[in-house]
Length: 51
Image 1 (cartoon, helix red, strand yellow):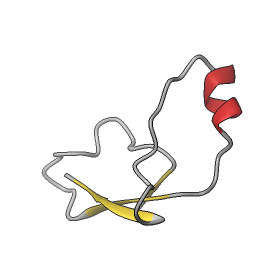
Image 2: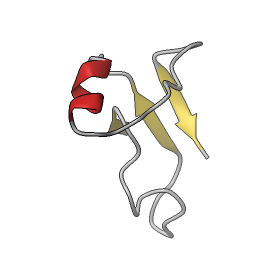
Image 3: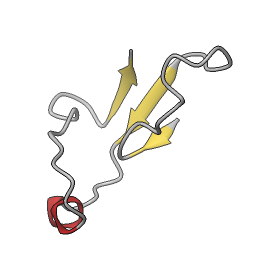
């Protein structure tokens, strides 16, 4: 499991099995404060499978 945003190098790695992303409720202002623009994948569920 990875939190808030997929970790680079994990998706598609040979040692990675099923990968899930969990919503830890990071406020959007935190991302924008770091200059990161994200759209939430959590509109339907608080945990989603990646890839």
